[in-house]
Length: 310
Ligand SMILES: [Ca+2]
Ligand SMILES: [Ca+2]
Ligand SMILES: [Ca+2]
Ligand SMILES: [Zn+2]
Image 1 (cartoon, helix red, strand yellow):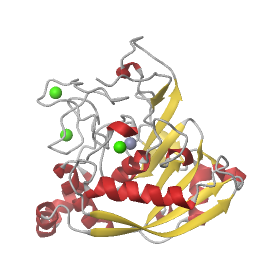
Image 2: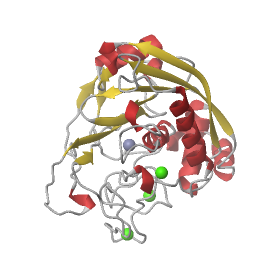
Image 3: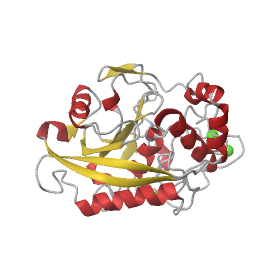
Image 4: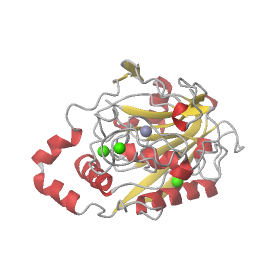
């Protein structure tokens, strides 16, 4: 069994239907155990908040799957997407390196690490790390280095929205990645394809610059923060979404009561069949533990792409 090294950090879901945020936060153990689950899931009860003018809700399950309406209206396309889960799609990536100076510590992610991050995306979405092949490929088309002390320290909000308005490139098919030194001990956050944020330039993912492969954010330094955030960007919810009675609207991921931390092999927090999907990219385990998407997630991502980005 893999033991969690320590619980000095926990992942925080800034709990939004509109935008998911992962965070690293100071130790705050509610239960005093040394098990991975001792790390509390903060902000669980956060009420609706306004970030950057975008009202973001509590993490209630969507009353209706945002995809359901599209499926009803486009049964043939939905069936095709479902049956062909894994149909090849190549996504152009524009990477905005927000830096306060030319040093790596100052956010100037080296080109080699950006390339390594793209490789991680292609490996994880290609199924070569152990899961299903999703059909999505990623092609780096531009690296945009931006000198801005102001934007380097970033949190969700008005400053973020202004930055995106200034920098966003392409359309809804283009993946804009912003790397920066995130405030509030955040690892990253993402927009969903089916939420109207009121401004198309708000679309994209934001990651802590030290989470890229070779970065200093051990144990979140193997690039799976980006893998996870892109999962949201392609329409996936967390595996632990709303606990045992909630769900991620994906049939082949077992229900999970709460996020997993570390790599708690054998964890089983819900009575429904199946162990917790701790190795799923849409859980909160350490990067080394995250290895897979399921065929059901592939189907969902493919449908979301067809419905909202294709
Ligand atoms: Ca599920
Ligand atoms: Ca179970
Ligand atoms: Ca991994
Ligand atoms: Zn997430």
